[in-house]
Length: 316
Image 1: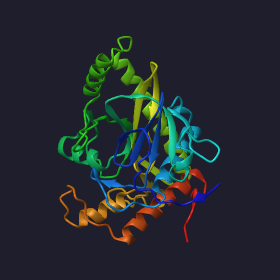
Image 2: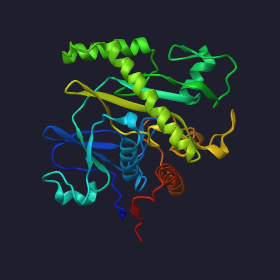
Image 3: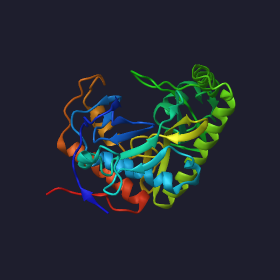
Image 4: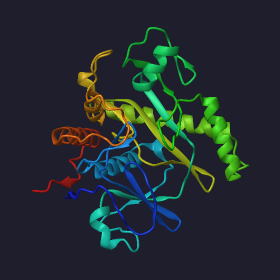
């Protein structure tokens, strides 16, 4: 069922816990409500102009994957806010929450980004060019930019509070998680064993998603996941396999070492790169045409991957 499109750049509701680049998070007793706004960021800077409907697409796509891929279970999602189900006290704000807010279990998020790459691109390509490795993993010589890897690789990174995430080795990730567990006094958990489970699940989710996407004419180049602990159980958390957390390519336009048109926010990044902007706030103004082209990319990847029409009606 589609809903009227209400553009949400920011929410200011009761019990705000935190505000990220895209999501506003609210406390619901023992749970959280994560609201995906229409904000968009590039190079870790939030743009002034929203992308209409983006938050709904992100939430609905995450729900699709969580309900479709076996490897995503167990996860943190309890339900997506709708006319039929609204958290107590938030009914007056339904127009801001419908279809874009997830009610989730409270999860203690592990302090590493869990990245899986099936193709060598972006920061991984730059690291490979310089060292022949990615996150401590030695790769074959002679790879080309955008080339498919023989097997997907797990390449963790830090989770920077400010600035950019930095790639790290698996051993470094285990050390970081070990310190995290010590602070949480989760003495019954072994950091390396936990990270082995995280790596295995990340690769399993990627492989299941990549097969699904390729059947629909889309290549999943890379993606990142977040995992956390809830009552000692490892749960998949946050957004899953969206254009904000993944690099999607149309299969029929894929060329190794060529221009790789993306069905994500790469169009926006390319525009910003053309300006010579120093990638520090404040961001430059974004033309309506760039916002619209970015929005159409989000809609296209949603339709192709889910087989569903956009979950909102355009306003007149």
